[in-house]
Length: 329
Image 1 (cartoon, rainbow, N blue to C red):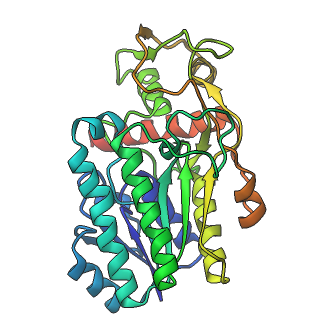
Image 2: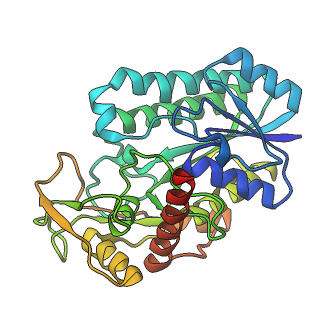
């Protein structure tokens, strides 16, 4: 029996593959390599280049490899891009997810873990924001993910599908052993951009607004190390295998760091200042977005191991240096 990881050649997906392999699971990766990399899929995982919306291919993989669970990362994740191309995002994130879910139900795959997002909440009225907060996504990205959550909810009721949706807050860092990291060239994650700036790969880091109602005037986000996030996925898989009922969990540490605090961490780790530029606020940026993360601990038994901003930054910096050497070879 195997686990199918869609988008397993990408940032978070490749870490999931490592997590599964580290505990002896049999892993199949389906990725169209539009943003992922074949070299990011470690052996003995098997990489199949293809589209998650190809229902015939998915059915073949499920049958051939005796897939018993699917962990679904494949999709598009750039919020401004989703505003410019909503139909593309609804196709990639919603229509193709529907195709995947249907293929699983037809083939009798009962366990499904979905990569969702805190963007389903939009700009929350209070922080921390809990799983029962009002949905109010402000981008097609957030809406496309919420629609997939609703499909999973309805399929659980109609067909008995067992699923867990994990709503990520701000994922950052890299595998502590240096085996994987954020490798997409146009990634917009703050800690990656700050790391690239510190290493001279970017001219400067833009700060989008210093006039928010926060202690230092910059936005606050809940940064979770990617390895801790993967541990939540592994625990979700164990939960479903143990007969757990469909559920949704926030994934964060329950505390936030501001943009200036992230910059300070990068400067501490590197020992030199970052060149920054003040820019206007970006439309739709919540001043504060922090996870109410008690349920993932209570129900799944999850607990973080890398809840330290300097550690997260150090692992991201180490990966950027490795990636630069790879790209230069």
